[in-house]
Length: 359
Image (cartoon, rainbow, N blue to C red):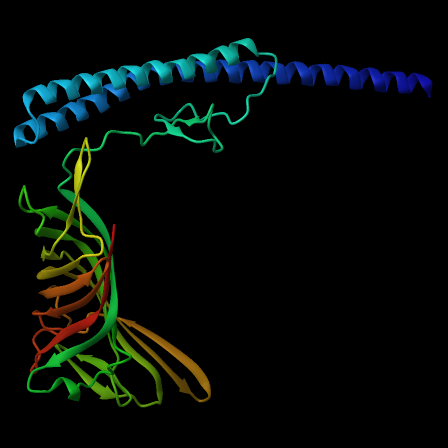
């Protein structure tokens, strides 16, 4: 028994030594990789600070061209900017050099706290996780463009949907007002039209629009050749809805005041908390039409999804506009193209609801 115990103790001791050696090897390898990464960061620091200096000099030249500063003041500002960037390089290099020295001096498994991600470029002050000596390296620390004339927004809209029917009043529509709805999601770019003013913006992008129509009086859509009509369903309908999905490319001219924000190295126009009006239109394609029916037959619940054209127009186009404050707008769109092509009675889709343009 004592012999077995001795062998077990010896095996455990050998295993412990191997684990310690392995851990030490891994740590040394990790330290070596970190040092190599930090050396690359030193190169990135120099390039980054030079890029910042170029942007600052460009901004100073713009101010000189605009007449807001004299040539003497411009030269002084350029020298100050160059001095600041040189000191930044010196200070940031010292931080990296100290980090390298710490890793080289402690290859025997010493772990540093709050290790920064050396694969990222940039710098921010703070003691958060992933930082070293209160500094964290980030990829997105790039100089801002002096004048950014184009921005982008995520677009989301929804609301009520219906149809204007030739020879009929809207309040006599065969479609439910509360149940017929539309939904739109997309992306839009906004470009300032004039160089020195942001009063007019050109807005363009793409959207997925889904227009829904729910017939009244237990009716549903029936396609007979090149004609689509409403007929009474033989059973009691719990739901009858036609969904038309379009891919469109909206274009609007947007008008409204904005606030100019000026910094030393860039300026921006902001429409936050401002009124704006957008007028324009859209054009695109029908990419799918589907009718959904729900009813009961002999006590069983039935669901039908009918995917067919229903003679809906392949090309869609129309007018749209919105009145907004900040990111929220009252939104109206009207299809100039008919809902159903080659019909005896023309119908055009109309929608009204809320629109959100979020940057």
